[in-house]
Image (cartoon, rainbow over all chains, first blue to last red; front, side):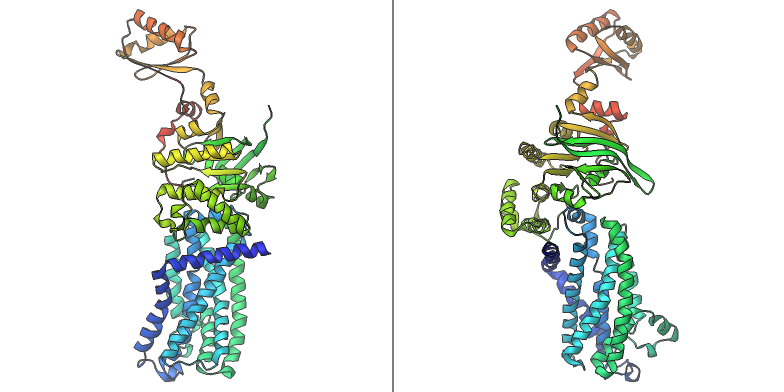
Length: 259
Length: 323
């Protein structure tokens, strides 16, 4: 058990080191979602967005939940990228010839992606706070938001890692990534509530796990516990099913790729 | 004399998507030797190596490393071996020392032991000075040295090198050869793949020539060359119409083992050049065959390769990782 932990912590530290050496990349990963979506998009649509539709005091406070979950989505879907590079340059093969437990590599990646995502979510909530968004459910609500983000992120990261092991080249990987990310955002309640969408988009968005996550985070920020609790309960159920499916599917890929 | 067997490959076959990469391969590697897998790209040598080091599972057949099956006891095997992959498997953002520290943790070395061993290895491969610089600043030769240090970190009984000098400059190559020889004197068993004939010739105690997934020849470089039967005298004639006459005249003579016509002259395999050369010259004189050029050489590994595979290694240009 202590050996297992030694492996996982050494591998996780490697991801942290890599990130800290890529200062620019780190800055952009951290800044991009809040800059593009929260600050620009949020303020840009301030007057266009109809308060009757969003049911929020202003568009930024409506959008915050969406940006939080978008960050989880993007981090999760990109979570396999480093493994993809490891696979391509032979580093993964080197790791696989060491007597480590095969799951250590995967677990270290989960831990790393979840930690970074949680930090980013906190930064987003902080920036939103500067624009006057105060989470209605307080610190406990923030903890609940982080939990929802992690539940969603686990499944996404699993998909991403499975994809990293399956694709032929990293070009393919990034094409699929680009193809998944934006439609997932548009076909969710991130930017517009379901009630404000064209009927067919609203219909599709209901099948998007992202919608469920956002609809639980949003009342945690805007309304309060009484409104949020049923949604939070529901999202836990949805995410457990989502994660189970993702983990089951990707476990098969991992086993084939790593022996 | 019975020698201790380090690796036993028996009837190994590996099929990928209906493509047979390796077919019914059997050989032993003795403890303490440098064993080479020689062949062109795509011959199956990397597949063979990857199977021995537990990265691939055989489609059929078995491989055992120091008595441990590579499938059932993969974890035990992994503790006994070190691996230096063909690609520079380097994380450009980590320093040399961090690479070794990471591997130290993955091999579960106690901290003090790891620190001591890392210091020794950095000294051995002469990377002490750049040890704390990110690997992206390293030259090709330095990366290769770091690769080797990584392979040696677990203090393996057997070290596997996949194309250790591919793409390196001459100086770095010779340096790597020195390391390999030194490791052998320390009692380590070394298995390497290569598609450089001179490397195989100079470095390996024994070789398996692999082509199209099968072993075509196995033995020490000297044995393989002697096995061809004698040295080679090549003649180039001024008048090529006389080739057949000279072939006929020489074929009967006892000093010639084999006489073969070539487009410009003859290739004659001889037992001892001292006896054969005067006889060849005499016959040429008698038949009034003027010689343009005469060359005599010991069989080279390339001749061995041609004899066993029907083509020259030189026809193949080293390509990046196609196996």
